[in-house]
Image 1 (cartoon, helix red, strand yellow):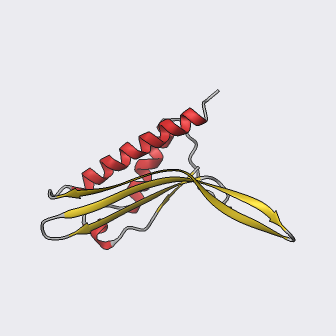
Image 2: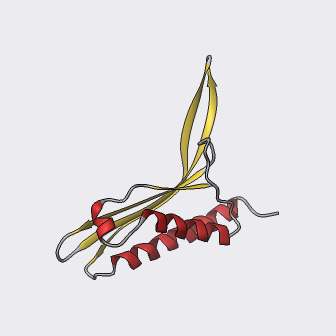
Length: 128
């Protein structure tokens, strides 16, 4: 499976979030759970999509965390082949925070969602 992190907006970056760190956090949790993580140059492997958004004002910060697991299928269509992506699992939430440590709070919520995905994935795909 591949981990795809959506580009972060400027408020997320200003809050100390980093796409590579987010990817590394998620991949490490998946690997520790025994889930194979790899880079898919062909673009046909299932992927875990991570989207984090932040809106910050002077006194309040709002952030969203969304994870979705997607499968890609190819289907013959006349002389062509259609490639379709299907979302088969998702979790998302919106949070308001007045404190300064948005980075840690966001990464904690992402860890919670990743663990939930891992539990659901392993329940549906038990190891032999």
